[in-house]
Image 1 (spheres, rainbow, N blue to C red):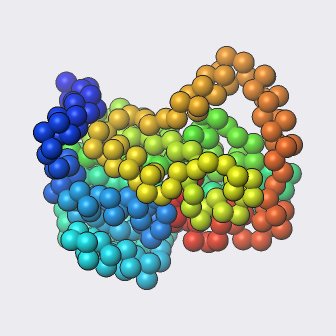
Image 2 (image 1 turned 60 degrees about the horizontal axis):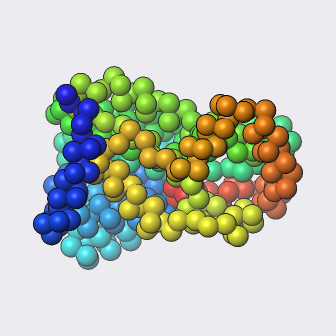
Length: 305
């Protein structure tokens, strides 16, 4: 049976724990690696996992920010360790894998959260191919390399879980996000196929397709300031629930509906999104062409969607 009933059984155990007042989480005693742990969803997820008894491995570029998160987790009674790494540096990722394996053994749960979002129209992207290269580097190549490095130990121990924090855009396919959504869609597909290959080894993959989350990553897009968005803490609760239940995907109902419409009436949805594309122009940051229009360079590890 393997993973066939893993998610419904986990959900049943959650109900039982609630009814009996049992505070223990399936994450207690587990080792959880979180990338993009210096702020945003990653930081909030690290705190939530530590609060449930997990040993948390914090990965991001900013050493000082990681030290702050680690110190606050330890002050609250949790266990956390810092690994300052540029995930776009393949050699650095390989060194991280070797170090973690030597010091902690197999990682039980990996949360691929680090990412970069770019909202820019194709018209403004003709001479900015580096937008595509940057998003692919951190949103797809980096998490895949890290996953492949940690996967052998997971399979050998007969348990593992990889959570890919992607975006509802893989279903919705919003204009001005071609580079970003394409990179996240690649990770989404990788996770689905990898999960089928590791199924018999007890290693599960979850694609977590978030909508808007109020982090640094979406701050420069003026249109988003008027829209509802999750807080990083609310998003982290969703991540933790996914870690505990190990579902295949976590979707928004609205994204499922739009995804179905994209299949059933593709030209109609093209028309609707074309009108929306004109109604919501490029942000000032995107038009200026300076830096990352979806945030400062720190956005590479914030995890906001």
